[in-house]
Length: 103
Length: 135
Image 1 (spheres, each protein chain N blue to C red):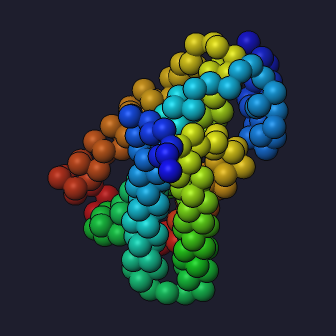
Image 2: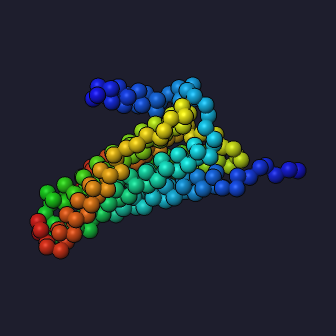
Image 3: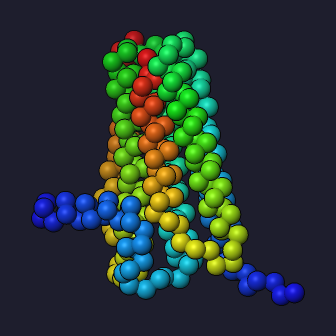
């Protein structure tokens, strides 16, 4: 049983943590969006926008989880542009829905 | 000059959706460099998320401000977040391509512009809160 060669700089681990941090930042923005809906006093548009924000957060969680699984390899593969586009789309979605929620 | 930059931008956007074309060029860099580039991309995404969250916060925590000013500030921050996210992926692709080709990493005016813009918005908010403008 030989252990796989470990990168002394812990690059994959640092990248995993960066994904976790970013997921957390998205969660903070999503909870602010939830507060925004209460603040705006309900109504169909803010509630719809909030559901889309929550959906985009869930999508981000899925992308991050997928990537983190690949990062467990000692020499992880390159982040695919498709995953990067998906992650960026989640952030863009939150921004656009946020604009729809303003009072 | 402008035409060349536009063509570059279009080529860059095409690359977002065609991952295999990125691998056709040059040599695969050390995976550690790619991971560092990925972390930079994520740091920019967090910056974008922070701007989006700031947009919500302005709308929620400056209730005594006039509606027009509050909306303008919130929309500026939300738009800034969207631009930041787009820039994140564009810069990630360009860095990855430069590493594959063995070129210098792309330089960019974006961090300075973002810094100035955030500074102006922050100053405006201090004035709004301290002086009670638009109340």
